[in-house]
Structure formats: C-alpha cells, structure tokens
Amino acid sequence: MSRTADGFTYFEVLLASIILAGAVTCMGLALEQSASVTSNAPIVATADYLLQDGFAWVRSLPRVDRSGSTAIGMEAGETAIADVDDVDDLAGVSEADPVDRNGTGYGADWSRSFTVESVTLADPTVAAAAGSTPLLRIRIVVKYQKIEKAADTILLSRTP
Image 1 (spheres, rainbow, N blue to C red):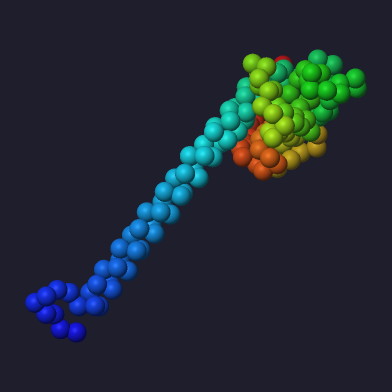
Image 2 (image 1 turned 30 degrees about the horizontal axis):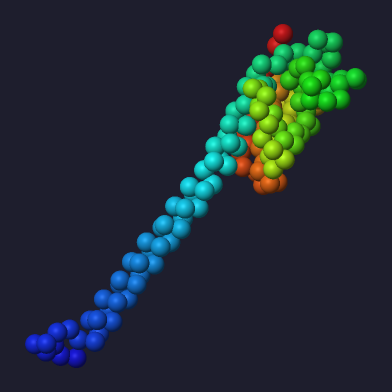
C-alpha cells in the first residue's frame, strides 16, 4: 500500500468511511433519543403535577380525625373519595381518572393512589402499629397506562 501522487490508498479510504459511518450512526441515535424524551415530556410533567396536587390535598386535610379515632382508613359511613375528611382516610384510596384540586379530570389512562401508615418516631422508615404513633407516612403513586410515572413520600405529624 503505497501512496501514489494520484490520491489515497484503499485502506485510508476504508478507514475514513468507517469513521464517518460511526459518526453518522451516533448522530442518528442521539436524535432518536431526543425525540423520545421530547415526546415523553408532557406525560412526565402531568405525572409530577398530579403528584404535587396530591401532596397539596394531603397538606390541606386535618391530621386528626374529628371523632377522635386513631385508626387508619375511612371510618364507618365513609366510602368514597368525597367522604375523605382527614389524612388517614386516604389509606388505600386509589383514583382512576384523578381530579385535581381545580376540578380538572385527567382521563382513564391516569391513576393516583395513596398509602398511609403509622411509623416509628425513632426511624420513620419503620412501620408501626396503625395509630400507635403520632407520625404518619403518606406515599402517593401516579401511574399512566398502569406504569408508575411519579411517586414520593411525605411525613406528617398527627397534631390537632
């Protein structure tokens, strides 16, 4: 493979072609990833909004039941989301087509669920017997087409 005055060797042309093909492939993959992220952005934004809206709802509710009950979950006579009147009533609540605090529904593809449990004061990662401590851990999970898109946890003290 000797260089002639007329141009490049076949090896040099082959090497340059391979490098160029690799660069074009990488650019194509980057564009594909960018399109995927861009098309998923509205879903992620809606999931985050529904999560934050759920936390706003939790924070707006009384932390102590008017009846004085320390049980976790809805009390007798409370059967629907409209009956939720304190934080512990959210235990096990799952909303298909969640509605935000402004009254906007998000469709059957969306769901939002709440888990409420008592946790120990010394270590809030450890669950305690229901109602045995004043500290509650509330977890909210938002799903789109049954796939989890956002989830987070908040700790609240059960104080009047």
